[in-house]
Image 1: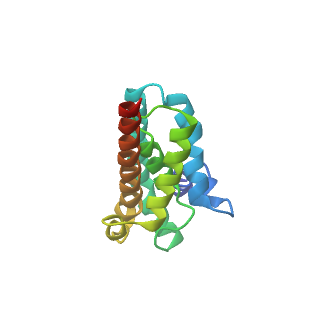
Image 2: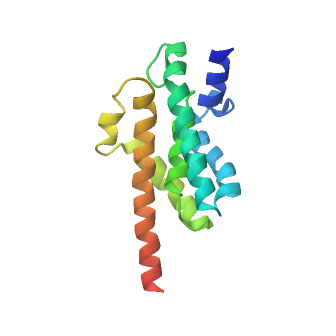
Image 3: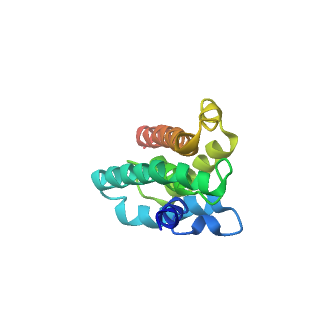
Length: 152
């Protein structure tokens, strides 16, 4: 029972089990939740924290169940990273699409230190690279946001 619950959480209600691009779908799934929480920074911060904690609690356990490093079924890391990338930004289509593209770029390309974080064992390795990819995307978006404010 506990393993089943962990798999459900780590796969974000089994989205990670879909046969095509589970990481991308996990990132997109976070946008459904984002739509409902994006207008309140405190609620969004609390949700991000809860998702990160749930990810750390379940990802390593599910990795052991599958017997492989960071199996594709685990997408709570992408879910968390995508939410982080959009934190404290206007909920416009431009920022959401750009945030999605930047997050996926950083998650796939893995610039330093993301590539070294991915090598860590268990939940730490699974979660930390996507958290930092989300932070990188958020920083880039914040720069774009500030630039837009200054230019208008």
